[in-house]
Length: 629
Ligand code: BGC
Ligand code: BGC
Image (cartoon, rainbow, N blue to C red; front, side, top):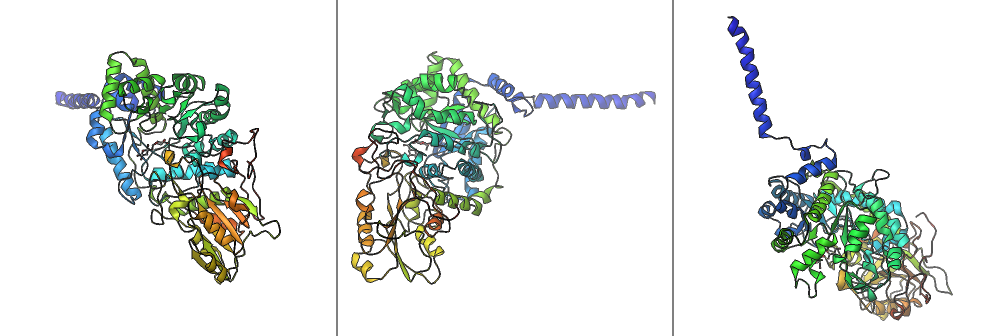
């Protein structure tokens, strides 16, 4: 009886103890998995557990096309990207994206240490690869607004749309200071003036959230509705000779630091998580191999603690021809201080070369550890370990009405009124909504793809109205005029048609066709044919307002005298209604040029402050009309 009385609880205790011990042995406590630990302690704990292979995997970013579950698992891949136009399926929904990203993530999580991968994409004017996303104006238009708070809201909206598709990382903003509009990426630049570019880095706290005060250099991302940002392309991308993409920026250190560097300082102060290196060279030295600037300046002097990512095959281009000595490229890039390499497809070659270089002590282990610690820091800070898998809860953010309204606001604030009325008559704008019959003409009046520009659905952009949802300028005009006003649309009407129709006035929309990167380099900067002749035929016969859709100032001088009004609308994106808002006076024009509008290309490069400054329209120019803005 007495035995029984004590034996039972004792047995119970032993069973409990055994159960408890087996539990501990089965799930060893791992500090890196404990969100209550400090980030640095988590990094240290994880680093201590990692093999060289696992570390090199973290440094490898591959394209989604090659990112199968098995590849993720076998090579411990740390990051995956969508290149321009690389989508799970045509017209993919938010759910299609989330499923794809999660499938890749499952591969990463199935590894021994279960380190989540970080998925990145170019969301450079809204979530531009995604069907149905809100397409915001390209940066060249946003610079015009000088409205940092607006740009911050655009960052926040973009973060939500990117997260809606399960993606936590955007390769934006481009903080290039474009000094020559012949550059095919000029539209990715906010301005020729670094002060405007600096101001526009407010998009970073929009994308990532507001960092705590006094945290210079520490990457910051405020959780599941924000994304890691990427200041690019470090440094001097906008200063290349004749604006030739990826070429050489020939300037002294003083100019590099005073024109192209300041926005990096702002970005880092605002907690930018990553920085992408530029394809270009500085005084003949490839940036991807520039240890002094990447490690010496960015990491040591500016105290940037996030990670440095290469550009797409950027390290391949360290050698000429590209990829002719890949092992050397890997060595030069990693020793320069690049932490993550956007490979993006030949990952086995990258991994093998980097492993040999470390095993042969060409690259010290300390360099690998620095790279991996930085990558892990971003992943821990943003909560990726706690929330690696996306869900469908934000799906309705993609292309939401609220974001489209915000884009429309940005469109009207980015339009610049360059001319309003010939010397001998009244201003034409704002246009009357009530008129018997009006003409809308021009190659760009009813072409959503043209008004969105490059980096929209496809890398090089798309022509036509099918690519995604949005409002063309023609549709916007029809939405805005009085129901009694007859709107006639003819892309390229002949003069007799214009003459014989008794139009009250005409709106002519012409410009450049979409391009991206080097495909957009242009030495003549002309608009698409027959733009000039459409202007001539229409404006010769009826009072006309010309709207130019372009990624930069283009040759207009020969046509300006014929126009009654001229508006630079840049690349406004999906919400063409914003253009009609200012044309018809529902809102006033307020935009001021953030670039110099040249007369002829032989003046280039020509930027505000230059001795030979003789523009068609100077930097800062912009007429206003009454109305709220
Ligand atoms: C990709 C882009 C990338 C480009 C680099 C294209 O094939 O789609 O994302 O920027 O290559 O040259
Ligand atoms: C561009 C980058 C872009 C990357 C990924 C490169 O060609 O230069 O700006 O982030 O491709 O698409």
